[in-house]
Length: 166
Picture 1 (cartoon, rainbow, N blue to C red):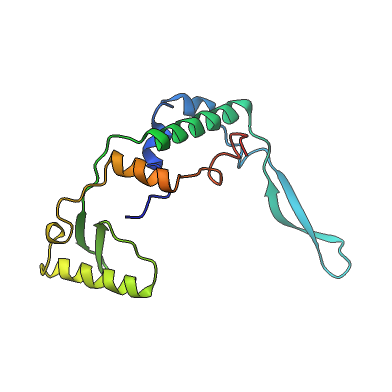
Picture 2 (picture 1 turned 90 degrees about the vertical axis):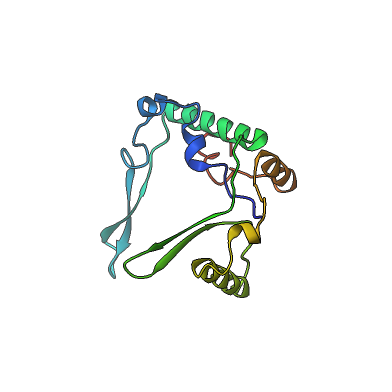
């Protein structure tokens, strides 16, 4: 099974931070920035708004992101007590049939996408079940820790620069 690219992004961002995030939250990315212009026209006398340069983070925001990075790192190293079992859900959308599938499959190329589509079709037609295909499979804390020992999750490209750790 492929290792998730992050450690439960929705859950760990809230764990341990509580309501303090709202108090320390400012709109540093959108407010207080500097407008950047580029010169246009033959003579270059006119200018056109092209982008923004956002201001530096406040100390409260920087400490928030540092704490968030610390929590994410700890959760990735220690894992959480959660068991994920194979499951699937079929639903009719206005434009297609949708299948949400949680299973220990890796899809790396077009051939494997076709295999996955065939497998989903078999599930819909009730020609097979997840119990038949993945009997007793559970992705749990021990599986996560094993995957982390092989290929640790890194947050360097995520929030580390905001926490001043990059």
